[in-house]
Image (cartoon, rainbow, N blue to C red; front, side):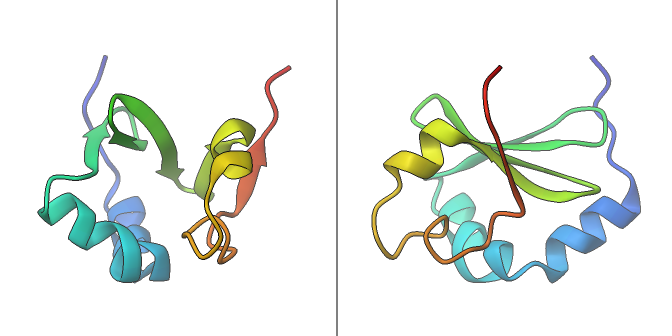
Length: 86
């Protein structure tokens, strides 16, 4: 496993409304934890991967999108692409 992150991905995350308005404070408060792996940032909460961020933006699993409460970041349309499990 290689821990690296291209500067463009880091810059794009910093410009993201979801990061600025929702996730950054949760990371600072240690509610959400991030992991960097091979040009991908994973965001974890209570042991589950909420979503990831890469050169295409935020992605999540349909499970988290279907369980997200009204008014949450997922409900606000911040997620670019939701992957269905095959």
